[in-house]
Image (cartoon, rainbow, N blue to C red):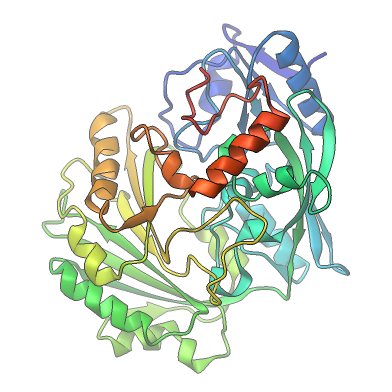
Length: 443
């Protein structure tokens, strides 16, 4: 028994199928034994059982955005979930069943059409499966909370092929793991039941480009800006080091206001009040904002991440000022609003955002003309420069190969202990390829 689409290494179509597994055109040279592309939950069961019959482990691919390539493990079966992309909205209950391959862009559009909202992710092609399992660090967190907090239930396929519905009252440990275990979940989630927010989301946005040759001064201005806007305004800074034609660092500041009726939340006014030359938009659907976000097709990608509670005035001066090997798209993405406005951590979840600011270093390059090593080294240089300010890492964006403690830094001690117990109970023979001891520890 095996799913309808099963390609073994050495078959004619295998190289193209492997290349399509990631949004990055560069992937590590780990070679799966087979790639199974599931079309529904029954196919997932068939793939898991087929792998077990052959003595092979299973690695899971949802949207292909894990730049640590947790979907690739040598000699394992990569289970590709991109075709599990159904979205069923119940407007009476304000809930939705969403499959893991449904992308952020498709989900946002479907919810907007139904008059509903949800804290979807910031990248349009991310699959909801990977996004939610990592914790769901999405839009409007201060008001809506984290994506994983809104998982009411999940249908999962365990490593022995059994299908279960898990929630607060049934297999609670698996339900909690579905809310933050990331790639280390001990099974395959085939759909999520999500609690939605009533009302379609509309936002106003403001943008300002500025020189960043004095990062401490710029950071202080941004900190002053944050003090003037309500929690419903999300602030994102795109920091670009000096490189190529740019002989000094520069930054773009983007403000996104979710309360479009509040004059105090007007992003253009807030930026101009701090002396920034700003432009903006009127009220637009969040779904449209997501649809228009860059996709960077054809790029090779690498990322690393840290959380911090420090102010911009302390963070920006520590960032590398030069990046001679970088392309224009490479940048450090600094986003506020990573915690709920009430300060509460997600309940009944492994996910714990460890800081009020999310800092992600993203490198983009052309693998045909540029080597990978300097790009990855730059992302790690960024996070190393912030080591004294860092309070943890986000498993959805961290470089899990960056040192022996990279995975450990993604989970607080209590969460690591709980995850180990959940793995021991539901995957005692390590049938799932990813491991919190290091995603290649079971290779």
